[in-house]
Image 1 (cartoon, rainbow, N blue to C red):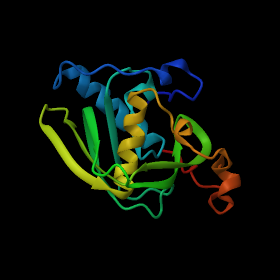
Image 2: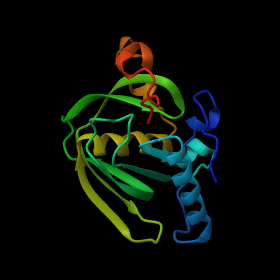
Image 3: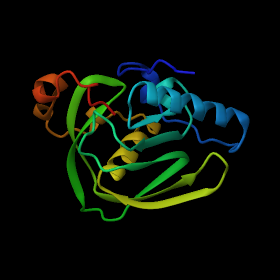
Image 4: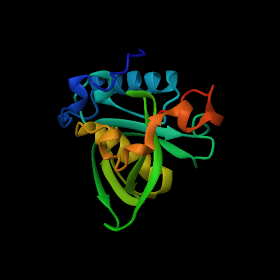
Length: 180
């Protein structure tokens, strides 16, 4: 089922999500199926459960070829429950442009850790642990921020680097919007 995506201003997007207590059940599988359909319908690179109004610590992400991210390296499709992120170096940040399905039509330059380890569980309860960098690391951090009630504009250091996508990137006008 494709869900509406909550947009910035909805108070539910600013709440911390609860941990999933029962991994592997039919409710979690149904939620993940809905999230996958919703993300695909919106050409997203990722989606967090709070974006569809479900306050649980569940994210999905993955990119093979996406018209909104023509230069992005592939990110394997992942369903991650109760994620924990650990930077691999505290002084290893890089700025990158981000958008979000909950902040449609906008982009901003956001600092993120360049390399990190993420851990959590797959929908079947198996442990997942990966060390990642680049776009993969950025996508994971963006999605996991949603679980703590943080939207990417809150991380922007210079608001002159935040604006309408079609103004910042006129060459991208007419694409799907380059959001999340």
